[in-house]
Image (cartoon, rainbow, N blue to C red; front, side, top):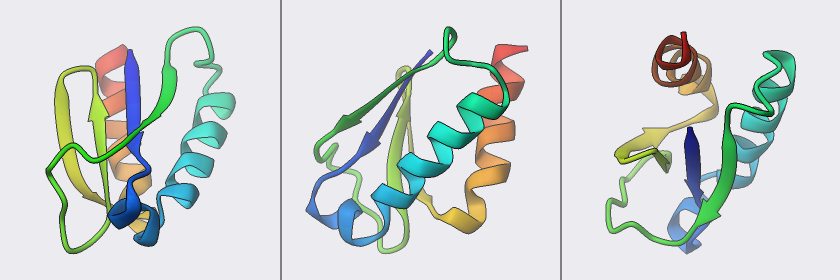
Length: 82
């Protein structure tokens, strides 16, 4: 699975650095280092007023905030890898 977190200027201002940290921690805690490639990317053209844009393989998700991260990770990462 390839997870790309937008680090463009808009997402950077909305907290992409924190989202990267949350992903790194969740990947370690779930021993998914060999299952997930975590990468940064620049603007995907899907900017949202709130949160960060994340691509998981070919799907793009917008509005991911630290508060929404846990549910997003469970639904779009863990449930897919099961």
